[in-house]
Image (cartoon, rainbow, N blue to C red; front, side, top):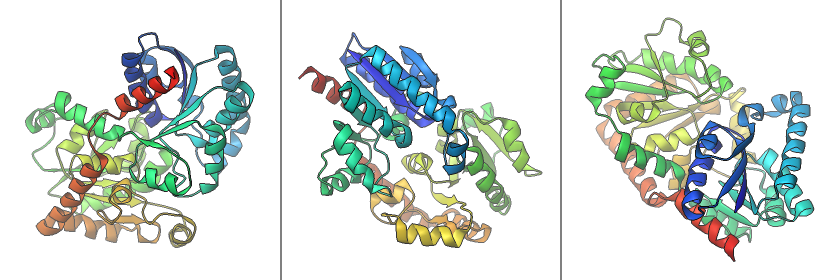
Length: 377
């Protein structure tokens, strides 16, 4: 069968590549065309456009690049029309993908499947109308999404979480000992404080300086920055200043595996940190912090920003964002998870609850099986 996939950023490229590999196991004749990245290309098929040409986030960047975005959509629509796939599979990236879904359903009348639901449970719940009209099947990776969509009279499948798969695969096949990791990276013998300051330049610019200042208050630990894909060392060096800090690229999992604690911006990284059972402080800078906190409380449909707390349905980790984001508060919370054994253990118990709720690995395989068999009938 012919599969057309659209992933608009690095995480989508990763999850889509794993799904493609699983589809090849189900369907030996699988043929792929896609908008995505290097990982998808490594699995096989035809890359139509790289996500680097598509990744515009936020109101101003979107506005400034509107002509490029519209041209990308036209290119995508024309390419799908020529290819005539058996199914179009969309991976997150809702601003772009929901417009493509409308075109595919109303003009081409082809099946549209969605893997990794956009976070409409946080805001923009009105998008459920588009899902009902244009998306035939939704495959979700967060357990609470099943109940959320059920209340909106929209049936979805929970397939497990791909981060569970990634961490399990790493621990089974690629995990390295502490001695090897410390030797390979030329580290001193101090315990590691991991700094995960986000994957985008603005996030790094906003969060890293405060993280480094907090780390400086704990000289018995060595801070190490998890370098984000596509961000150069020179960009980090603008913010590291005189801080004694290392930047390690492409080794976030071994870094987390051997860390004592972590400072983490919100996103998938908070979940991955919990899967490694590393105590963390979630800290995310927003301009006009008090206003951001007010907007979150009154206009968002969720209590939490971190996946850890959202999955647990309660506060497992502290979320220091908006009005709560400050060096002092982050420093105090880090002190608690480093020095208070009972506090630390309570967080680890919360992680165990999250791991139980998420279920066993196999998200890509389950999704591929559901996609392939549904297309056969």
